[in-house]
Image 1 (cartoon, each protein chain N blue to C red):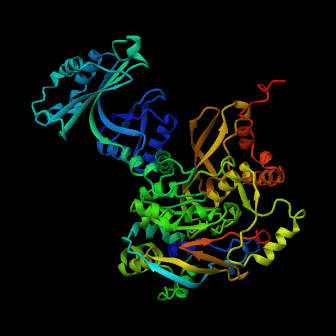
Image 2 (cartoon, rainbow over the protein chains, first blue to last red):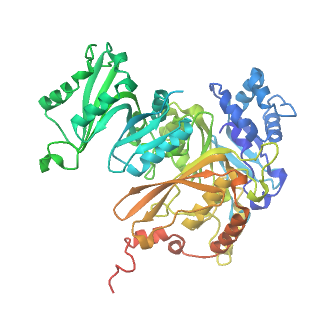
Image 3 (spheres, rainbow over the protein chains, first blue to last red):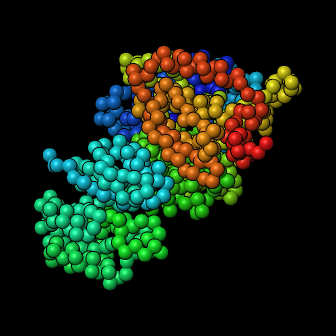
Length: 127
Length: 468
């Protein structure tokens, strides 16, 4: 799964729905793989307003990528700044989480990631 | 500003109820100002009015059900009428500019046929066009086609002439090659419920899958819909409650990932995960609190959601949980003790098909951007008494309902648009939520939960038809 996916996923447990600590999930023992993907500025522009920037900053740091600025770029800044475009593209589109765990900061549940596929199925007492 | 002109779409005579909704969706996607002049389900010929030739080719370039589009030079119930209209429109269509072009003349007879000598004499009747260029059967500069619309069975009935003619200049083709490219027969990894390539691509068209957009299929299986959306350039995400359907068999290169690899679409595979839509990990805000944030950030992620949810006939309709926890307390206990083990399989319970559809709509309302689309398939009995209604949601507007009919049942492809919050009637939404809360309490057995499954296994016998 592309790292972008982590910006969309929160803890699936019922009791974590209201907690801000359940998002983003924290990668643990993460194995990453990198693909060459052609840069698509249109996709990144569309994505920008849908990203949770604070969550992305956390994910970026936790995966060992350089720290992202505190504030997200504006659409104009993104479109005119090739470096920001490339950095975001490399992190969101080219980096894949292959193995490891995604840990909820609220309940501590660890979702396993195998062969790039995360498993969010929960036992009955948590749904 | 060019004047609007008439164009002829030559459709494939299949999946008839899907044809116009597909073209209307493509008009939205391609910003084409479409006006339908004449269309009916029984004919493959449709006349539309458009501002320009470039809009005509753009309109159908990715259509699965339109074969080609033509500048309409004339039409009529008899050949002389065709000639009269062609001649009277001569200045609009500017014959002169094709005077020295290489060209080709063809006759396309729907439900009928002509002998070659008859074809030649019909073609010669257009000699007044006066083209001087060479005739080239392979890639000519211009191609002119006389379309004939014959009534069904005209040959055995001995009917000598078609009921209608259209004459036009070829402009462009649809994307009829794509279903062949994505053909299930040649796909590396499929399952019994994989959606056929043609219908998956049509679904992606109706939902406006396109480059730069984010699409999601919550019942993705082996990936038919995510592949179709990726083929049109969208970034595709998928999930399934059964992780095995996506994982397949990596040792044989039979996985969802390998399907994307087969078609060179891996850059468009966003990610897949195992989950149940009813307990989805996708982040979203409750609908009542998403009232028009001033910064334009709504927290909604997807441009489109496309899916074929399980009907509960061939595959069980299950969600996470235990049917009756008080009767089987040990199952929950086991879950509490074992759930951290890597090989623990969480229990699942039967779920209502109608509740599942409601969950899809609610999820779509919470995660689609403004004007984003959800297109999903649902089955229903053909018998009126047992027919299931089109599910509704106050945040979603029904755009089209297309039907594929089988013997005693049909499946429908229903497409909705996410209304911007300002368009939503909040009072209607409150009463909708209240009604749904009550409905959820009803039904216990798999049959009661699933009226379609019940009717299917009873052979779609309606009450009135059952003897005694």
